[in-house]
Length: 198
Image (cartoon, rainbow, N blue to C red; front, side):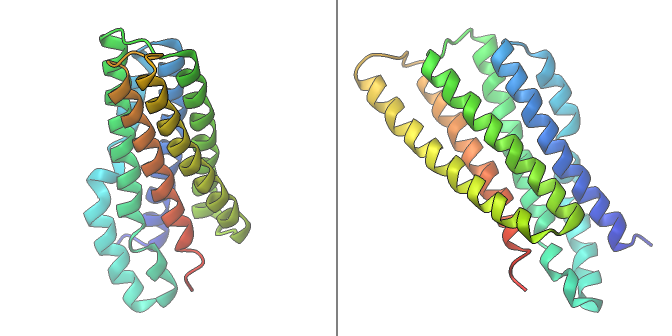
């Protein structure tokens, strides 16, 4: 029978995969290369396939050990992260295939968000490994920064679009990237919040 540690190992694996995928997506975006996208796609669907099974097992185990209740919704949240990583991958793939140009400003803004997202997901994987409460605060601060920046970048992008400073074809891709990045950060923050609701 699968133990809680087996379930936890799978969740940690999914969190580490998410971190690695964001690094690959950043590489694909900055180098305009589809090769890292293929590597990312091989890593992504693990939790989406395992979500229902893991949730069921952890729910059953939590009936015997109340301390495990905080883990019940984590497979769903990890699956949400993977879903938005897939969306990001699809958007970057479309940008590359259709040869859509982003402004220098949009490229630098996304570079900042990718860096923060990697930090956030690394801390999330470490939190699942250690349960360290200091990481909860780091994740919370990082998530707030990512959400704030994503909203600021979306607003300034719309202003640039109105002024004719960026291509209209790039606009939906850029805004959808910002939205997926924000959703990934929010899911990671929800995971962190499970470690303070005791």
